[in-house]
Image (cartoon, rainbow, N blue to C red; front, side, top):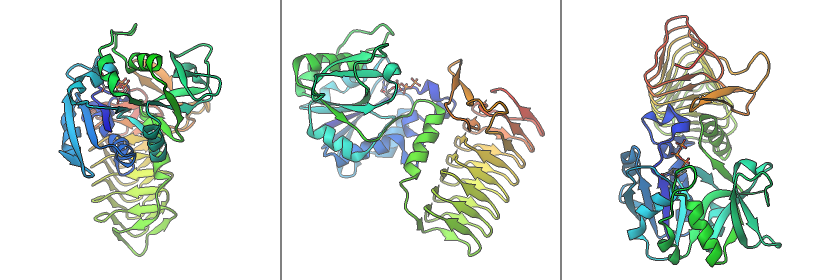
Length: 395
Ligand code: TTP
């Protein structure tokens, strides 16, 4: 079966992290989000991967090349991101039988994707407490056949949210050219509607599903996948370092004396931590990251080449590639009024649903010494701060 993986989107809600990296290529544990998707497809028995790329598509092409885990890889370009059905339609000429479609920014468990592939035609479903903000599947009485899909219903027919992975019959190749929806996009759910009308479609409940749309969802995806880590110390760990629990130090990483790491934590190749640093919570220390003397990092994602200089604190935060936090930079991750931390997402002040959330620093943002950062602050691409500054708003 061919697996069409959608990775062309602009990732506007996750800006500034998507300014230099397309959202599907942002890291979750030791690989990009879309590599987790591809891995589940490979493990479920796909025989070809077809990536739909667009925004910063070269990142995807470079990562996967022409062959991935023994499977041939093809790319199609979607010039304008006008919807998921349009994205699959771009791949139409490659399709020659039953085919899977998967969002390239969702995390699934491999076993559930295998079940999805085996149950074709099928749609992945994830049980949620409040389905009103999702596409929701209607099923027959026994729950074994999908009868409809309804967007953001006030009165949801089930608690099964559409989890963004499908297996379509070969005939669906002819259904891809759907008109734009009310919100102006050509949507894959309209293709699904037609498949539901003409075929017996099985809902397959997935055990793990995370849709990474906004910065805190990237943090959450990392928390969950890092918790799968098993202790593995291959790098250069000094005798005086204390690594507790499931800590992975990749080959080529250095952990200096006096460092305490409480797992789960992943310290990637080329990273250097310490001396006397403290890493706790689920933390990803990306490739070539530098965590300096007496720095504390808690429950955060530090992307490739980020630097956090001595005497700084970073909590519940996401630092993009090549961010540089000057000495004494302090992130606040809790509000005095104990309300959930909010973040501006496309101009809307949005709750992260988290009591503790720090900041989002865009690629190459730089703080000067003794900068204080308020919870929920975003620093844009290349933003800077002045020495001693308290940053209360996005910049
Ligand atoms: P979305 O998350 O809806 O869109 P996006 O990734 O552009 O993010 P944002 O809404 O923040 O701007 O897309 C779901 C998946 O489909 C995702 O993997 C990107 C992909 N996609 C395309 O490949 N082409 C498209 O035209 C659209 C809209 C999405």
